[in-house]
Length: 537
Image (cartoon, rainbow, N blue to C red; front, side, top):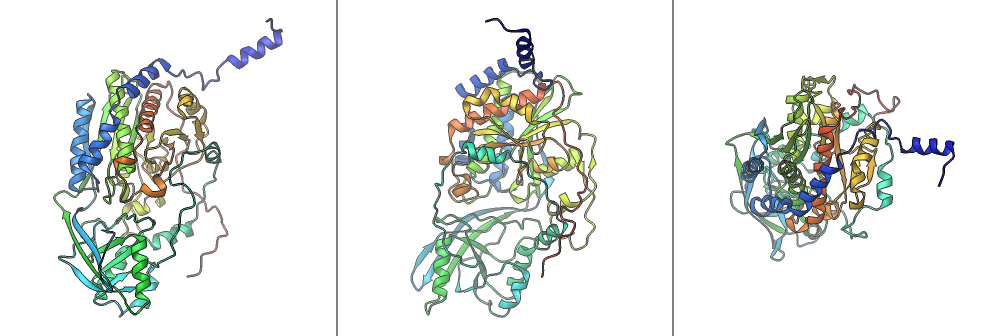
C-alpha cells in the first residue's frame, strides 16, 4: 500500500518516540529478570522463614532481632555488598509468653483476647467484676471518677456488630483502577493538625487515670468482627510504658460481657498475662544492602518494605510479603550479575508499625532534617507525631543522591501499577516501564498520592518515593494486623510477579540517563481554607 506524502509524514511522527519515551527500556535484561523471577524464585521460602520459623516481629523483640540477623545473612549469601544494620533510638522490646482471658461468672467461658503491646504482666491471674466505662477523650474521665477501684474496666462503647455484605477477598477492577487516577488537591488545615495533636497522648493519660483510680486492668474491643484480635499499642518508649495491664478482646466476646453488665448477672472476668520487656538494646535497626553501581557520581535507587510486624499472628501479609519481595528482587538482580549505573540499595525497615520510624530515621540521617519542636505542649509527644509539621526542611548533602525509592506494603496481592504521588512528570516514564508487564495485569499509573507507609517521609522532603498498587485480596478485610495474618494467605503467583516488577523498576531507574523528575522541595503551605473556624470544645 502506497501512502500519500502527508500520510507518510503523519506515520513518521507517530512512530517517533517522545523525548521521555526515547529513554529506552532494556527489555533484554527484563527478559532475564522474568526468567529468573518465575523459574527459580525463592520468594516463598523467604516468606515462610520470616513467618513460620521466626513469627511476629515486633520492633526490638527477640523475634525481630532474629529477623535482623537472618535477613543480613541472606543478603550476604546472595552476594550483595555493604550489608549492615543501621541503628536508631527506639525504646523497649516486648514479647508475649502466655495469655488467657476467661469469664468465670455467670458461667465459665474462655474469651478470645490478646495483651496490648507494651502493657505489663498481670503477675498471676487477676479476677474481678467489670465496669463498662467508655472513654475516648480526657473529658470522659470525670464521669467515671470514683467508680473503677478494684474493677476490670471495659473502655470501649459496645457498638452493634457489622455483618459483612461484601466479599472478603477481591481483586481490583478496571473501575477501581480508574478511580485511583483522580488528582486530589492537598488539604492543609492547621486547626485539624492542632486537634489531632491534642489527642496524641490520650493513651498515656488514660493509663495514668486508671492507675490513679485503682483499676486492676482494662479491656478494649477489637475493631473487626469475626473473632479477630490485633493487640496494637504504641507506648514503647523507655520510662513511659504503661503501668496497667491492657487487653484487646474479640468484638463478639466483648459485646457479650457488655450485655451481661446491664443485667443482674454482671460478669466476673479473669485475666492472666505473662509478657516480657527486653531492654538490652533500645536501638532498633534498619537492614540495608547494596548492589554497587558503576558510576559513583550517579547516586542510588532504593527499594524497601518494613520487616517489623505486630504479634497477634506471624505478620505475613503485613509485611513479610513486602520484605520477601524486596529481598527476592535483590536476589534476582544479584544472581543475574548485572552492573547498574547507579547503586541499587535494599532496605528492610524497623518500627514502621509504631509510626514509620525506621524510614524516618534514614531520612534524618541521610536526606533532610527539620527543626526541633519548640512548643512545650508538644515536646512530650513522640518526635514522629510532629515531624511533618515543623518547618523549614533542610536538605542534607545526600539529598540529591537518592534518585528514586519504591515501596511495597499493601499485602501479598500482585502489582497492578504504581502511584505517581502527584508527580505528573513521572507518569509517562512509569507507563513506559510498565508496558512489558501488561499481560501480567500491571498497567495502571495513578496520579493519586498514598500514605501510611515508608515512602511518606521521603515524599515529604521532596525525594521521589513511590508505592505500588496491589490487589487487596483479603488484606484490609480480615488480615491487616490480625490474629490470622499467617503464611496461608500469601499468593505465590502474585508475589513472584511483584518481585519481577520490583526488580525491573529498580533496573530501569538505576540505568536511566537522567534521574527521575522531582517535585519541588516542600515549603510550609498556606491553609487550604483561610476562613476555617475552630470546632466547639
